[in-house]
Image (tube, rainbow, N blue to C red; front, top):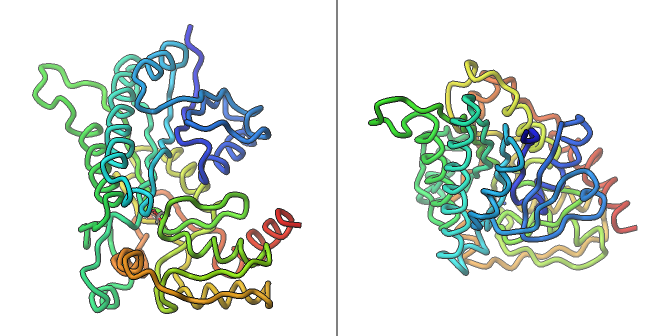
Length: 336
Ligand code: AKB
């Protein structure tokens, strides 16, 4: 008989690191992780890790021959800045990788005669504010507003949201018999800030980079303007949201993709927060106009009313608590 399990892709990444520890603490039955990279030793002992490529169909078939996957956290992705250097590769990983997993989850839902729950981290990058005036006019965007991404990564995320909705509601709609659909659930994350991992390849990275540099006593040159504003969230809240949405009864969900947020602040506010704890931090601003353009196209804030109403979403870490209780104590310890 196949062993039941939860699959996490991109498990060696930022969210994966925190999600593994949280799931293991919860005593999840079996965690199978997939990533091109090995996991840190402390996480390796909590999971069954498969070091391999998401695009490797044989590997995925071997996985489902051995495990009955009931939930997928599909975290693997090339982030916005990195994707701009290799757009076609980003499309392959972000879209074809996701499509391969949706196909797998759809087949497993048939096999099990029960939907596989498919968690998908989308992003504020799915939005595209045409200019700063409109960005100021819409300080808290709704899920259906300004879905005009201007990065490959943003296009990938928006398209995969639509693919997930298709596989959950319309897959094989012309077949004589309606297949058992998978259960796709997406979250549009703001910029995430972790105390335990450094971001890689994103455009919201200036926030966490600034903080980690200050803790290391290194000078930091911020690549966006002082007034550049986007929403952020502390990593524990991101993991709480993924797990809460995964556990929510399907009947309570009015949409397939939800905005969630915690706090919005400008780059200079971020600097001031960092300086509250690291007064000697050398932080200067030298905007990279092209990366600045990406951040300007992202909303200053999100409206997450639907998530709050449908599955009781509420961030535990506001700005002050994020720094005071989570980021600074853990980052200090990390670099001591
Ligand atoms: C990025 O900067 O690419 C990501 C994101 C906002 O989705 N952190």
